[in-house]
Every structure is written in structure tokens, then in C-alpha cells.
Length: 300
Image 1: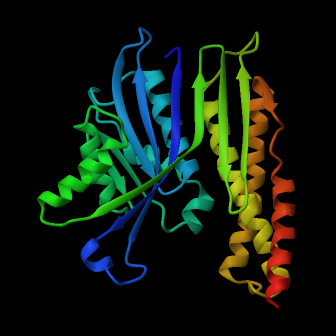
Image 2: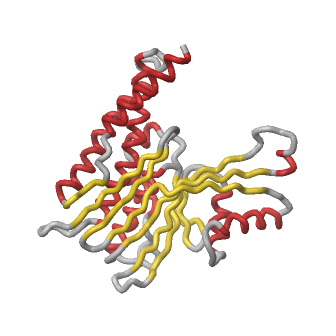
């Protein structure tokens, strides 16, 4: 694999039923997902396999893609091996201890040619319909939403689907260098930055480690914001001492330290540069604390 290009999408589907929506409020159903279309090609540039990865959160989607890429680089196509590829082992390696302990809503679905080949956890069934339509579509991905509406119509159910999709990560990697652009959308602002990584004279660029660092930034920025908000909630007694929430906040701080180490390891192994600047988890945490102070003080 000499090159790799992928994008991570944050998606929201709003499903309206005109019959039940009429004259009523808040009847729409919302389906959320993060999606990566992973094209795996051999060194000649031929497409060997295409997998669609959907997960409940961004960093898990990104990490799962990196694990699949790693296996493809080491052993070639996944679906034609003598021994079946163990998707569960791969997924379990993605779910870290913090995620396992505190994110009970995690889920994953991997698709090939519109069919689910691995799944765990609960997701909205609309996502399966979308992937089936996309596999048979041959056009732009967003056209699959209209096809999904038609599919529901054929079963006697009329629905209208609104779609909101935003790119959260763009990865462009080559043998010697690569670039990751990350777009983080918060309640009040959007933060965009990118980092480049290049081989050194001693070490070729690792696709897996580069994508892993991108996942660490995605996870770390969200965790830092949560920790900052919760620090203030603990100080104000909104979160009780010795509660599950306090324990989660304590473990989140440890997780942030591990994510920082993961990013530092990339910087130690390769030539890494940031533009405009490297995100600072601690700075994000402090900004969240200031925001929380303003919010909760105003309420009181």
C-alpha cells in the first residue's frame, strides 16, 4: 500500500413520518453515526476490498480503520484468507479500558457490498438500509438517502429523511509522508488544524501510527472538554464525590495522559509539524472550566 486516502464523516439522519408528525411536536427520530469508507488497494493501485465502517464515536471508527489497514498491509485482503478474519478480536483491541468501563452505548457495524459482516451493540436500522442502497446505487453517497425513502415507500411506510453530514477527519498518506486534517465542531465554535508526518532516514512512515495519532486527537479533545466541565460540576456539588461520574472523570484524566503519550510517540518517531498549532488538551480543559463556571454560576 503506497497511498491511502480516507475521510471520517459525522452523520445525523432525521426521520419524519408525515402521518405521525402532523400537528405534533418532537416526533422525528434521529439516527447518529460516524462513517468511514475504507478502500484497500494493493501496491499496483488496484482496488481489492471496500469496507464501510460505522461506529458510535469518531475515535473508535478511526482506530478500527487503522487496525484493518494494518492487517491488510501485513497479510493482504481480509475476505479471501484461508482462516476467517477475526473481526471481534480487532474490535476488542480498539475498545480501551476507559471506553469499556464508561461507554455502554458503544456500537460498531462493518459492511461489505451492502451487507453487515460484523456488528455489536445497538444502532438504528436506517443505517443498514442506507448502506444497502449505497452498495446498489453507483452514484453519489447522498443519493442513497432518496433511495432509502423509496425503499420504505415500497414497504408501505412513507418517511422523509433529512441528512446532515460533516467531515471530521481527512487523511492523505503516501509512502514517505502524509497529512491529517481534523475538524472539531463544538457548541459555539469549530476548531480546525492539521498535522503532517514524514519518514526519517531511519524509519519509514507508519500509516497505522499516523492514523492512531489522529484518533488520539479526536478522542482527547472531547475528553478534555468533558473533564473541564465535570471538574466544575464536582467543585459545585453537581457531581457528588465518590459517585460513578466522579470516578469516570478521574479515569478520563488518566486516559488523556495516555493519549498524549500516543501523540508524543508519533513525534519521536517521525518528522511531525502542526498547522496552525498543536492542540493542547490542558488548554481545552481550562477553557471548558471557564465555560462551565459561567454557565452554572448564571443558573444559580
